[in-house]
Length: 124
Image (tube, rainbow, N blue to C red):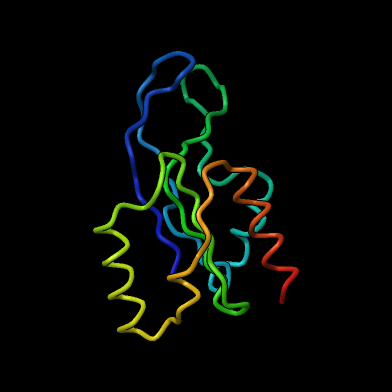
């Protein structure tokens, strides 16, 4: 399941504050249209309602393709905290998602994230 959350942000250009929706989990098997949003850089991007400039929100995202059985992390601030990795391990084992989710590669730049996705798609 893809997960979308609402967050308060301040525009880095003008400082205007607003609430926007961003994805923290993208499941392209259940929501195939999100694949293109990742690849065209429109996922987790908002347009400031004050100055009109476009801004990317660099937050942790997991890209999950259940059909091709791979996942990729985008972690711009570093690695996934241990407590989150332990929770993911418990959940994935309890619902039988598979080991591939636990072995998902980690990327720290959006371009590396997209490249990892495209590389893993080629392997299938």
